[in-house]
Image (cartoon, rainbow, N blue to C red; front, side, top):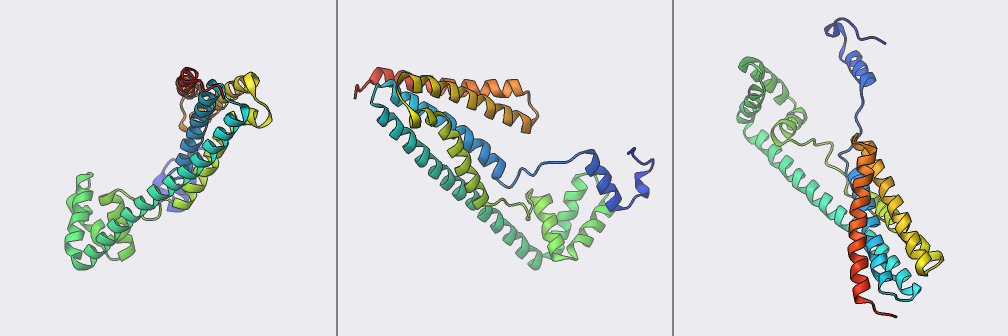
Length: 249
């Protein structure tokens, strides 16, 4: 469908539908996607490094298996707890700022109106029009709060993020990443399991990088190579340390 000659003649709903046909945006500010990407990457890199580092010291296969399982569980729980606490603290901080703004609007409505008008003036509106917009918005407390939150504080009151969603995403994603290099040790051991962990770790890192590239719009090859290189460097360092330590269990 071609665009109309004069969008000014359309209603708000018609303009909105036209815009959404042209492009859409992913919802990326609820904490879930960020936690998922970070969790999967951390799970893969940390556990493949741990597993290869322990395996390089030549212990029994059961020791490597135990280390991998411990790394998976401890890491997933730690990641989920960290995400929950950080998101909860962020939400509480933003909620406090909104409470301060709400009180200011009740105690000093005229000052808050002037403040909002000045913000709009700084963005290019004529003083008279900025004042009219500010006065109009201040008539409704909820609209006024949202306007101040967005334009003064730079936050969306309806999009503070969910700590529980972030924690669940983080736990699940870390577990998926951590299990990739651990699978060979759950069904076998020795040199074959080491090689399998390396291969699965490299493939998992490349796949994760490609997924990130798909979401961010960056080159899939570049994103995959970057993620694989990061995992390879980390694994090589721990493998080298494990070889030097060598417990011979």
